[in-house]
Length: 234
Ligand SMILES: NC(=O)c1ccc[n+]([C@@H]2O[C@H](COP(=O)([O-])OP(=O)(O)OC[C@H]3O[C@@H](n4cnc5c(N)ncnc54)[C@H](OP(=O)(O)O)[C@@H]3O)[C@@H](O)[C@H]2O)c1
Image 1: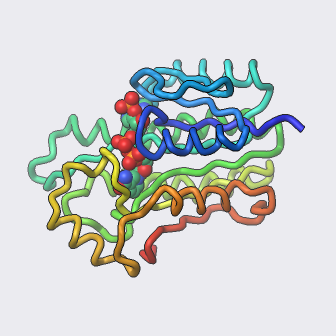
Image 2: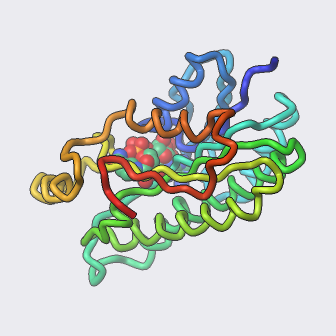
Image 3: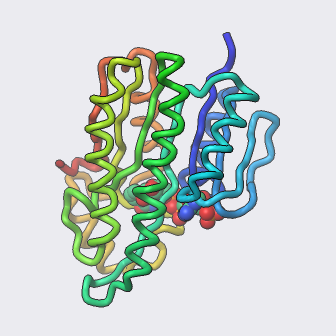
């Protein structure tokens, strides 16, 4: 049987890079992207330097992937940006950038990959949200709102794609030490961790545990679900 083909967005660093390496180590094919150059050297890895809000580049990436590998099994919509700001001091440009990357990027990949998956009558899509959304986290209005939009997109597309053997779910990590959160002040971070049932940072193993569950062959009856880490409730 041919190896599973993954599309993972935002693979230059952080969680996306770890995910790419984890699935490459398992012998799968990974096609990744980020604005910057590739940081992964592997015979089963392909990299596209693009912005996830650039529609024509994404269409081309998906066409090229389908051409080379003949199928796309799994999409992990990981690319994302955050910016802490009180609403009064949030520039319009910042709000637009957050929505372009997080929401429109997720939308474009979901749409283009789903076209391929519909024909295959099989697929697994995992989107990325955050505990900041259910916690209604102060200072993260634009970031949390962009992820709230992703949650709704997940739930509705799960219904639209259900008849085609495609599941669409979302994972909401707690803070995980990456560049994304390096500028959050310590007292803000401690206050956030204290609102979780289990008061610690998330780790890569926590993330991959949920993703492995969502993409499992046996998870064909699991769709439209949002799983938060750390015991945060939706
Ligand atoms: N870390 C946390 O605490 C945490 C908590 C909850 C949820 N999450 C979610 O987890 C996901 C990954 O976060 P992370 O912590 O790994 O962040 P990160 O370390 O900042 O990495 C973000 C990745 O996305 C890429 N990227 C950013 N904007 C992009 C764009 N417009 N087009 C293409 N690629 C782009 C970056 O590469 P380039 O710079 O080369 O583009 C990088 O590879 C995000 O969706 C985030 O919201 C993270």
